[in-house]
Each structure stands twice: as C-alpha cells, then as structure tokens.
Length: 116
Image (cartoon, rainbow, N blue to C red; front, side, top):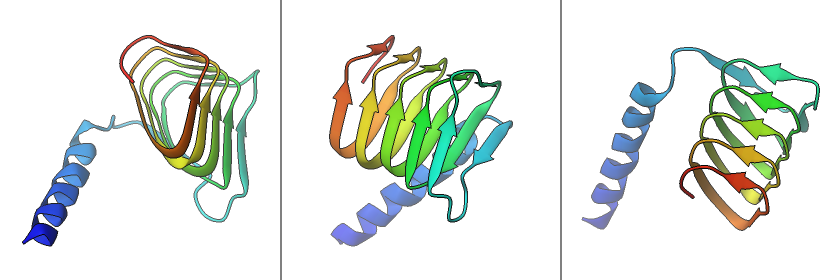
C-alpha cells in the first residue's frame, strides 16, 4: 500500500515538472561528462538542465537550473530557481528565485531572494 502511494507521488511530480518547465531548455553535461563549468564571463539566456560529476556556475543563468551532480557550486547568479540534487551543494552567489536542494550537505553563504 505504501509503495503505491510513493509511486503515485513520484509519477505526479514528474508530470508536474514536465508542465512547469519552460519550453526553452538548454541541456548541458548530459552523458558521461565529468565537470561542467559555466565561466564567470558566460551568460546563459535560458533555463538549463545539467548532469555531471561536478557542476560549477560562476557566470549568469537567466532562468532556472535543474541539476544533478556529486558536487554543485553556485558562485554566480541565477535569476530563476535552483532545483538540484547531489552529495554537496554550495551556494556562495545570488539566487533570485527559490532553492530546492536535496543533498547530504547544503552550504549557503550567498543571497537567496525567495524561499529555501
């Protein structure tokens, strides 16, 4: 009985995400990419979906970042939401939206405009 509730919640969440995500989505680091780095001089003008061993954002993301990695560092600016899962998530930069983080360790010393 409990398993069916969990599957229903997971299935509903996946469907909800499919309808919530913006139509423009930049997929980065998909496959066997070890490190994904968005440099300080880079400006991504759309939401991104990223997967890698380590993800580092030093630049600007004008939209949301949805990511999964062992280690995630947001040191730049994200104008939308941060939705990430990993072993360690560190935010030293600025997030203008909400942060949804699932990790063993979450460190925040930056600025989050909305909810954590």
